Length: 129
Image (cartoon, rainbow, N blue to C red; front, side, top):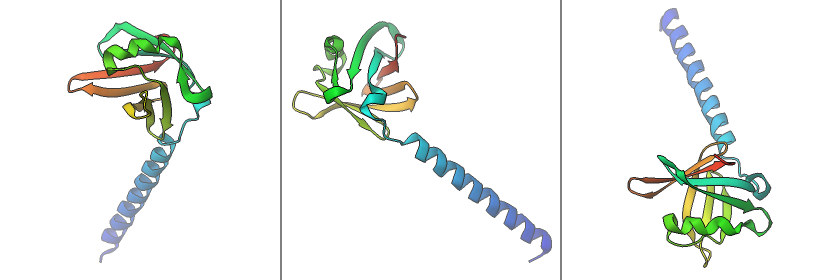
């Protein structure tokens, strides 16, 4: 193998190693399990493209429950969620019997989304958007 070919292979190997390390590091950071205390607080739910029909709900860390306003989610989910549970990539909204109604996928800090129908996305954002 020529000296140039050797240097090229070495450079490609270094780039591949760097990309692998960067990707693994980014994935590890994005999949940290949030604690109930970190997720507790005021959240606004709405259908993507229709923020004016928003529903404001408090997630309560103790017993992973909701404020009374959670009833507004019944329109979109078919029933009122009774509890919630953090996951490494988001959180589950749970029904009366403890089964998952929907998984809200973490898109970025303070923003979660779930496809609830083929062309309908439920958005959950931190605060009073």
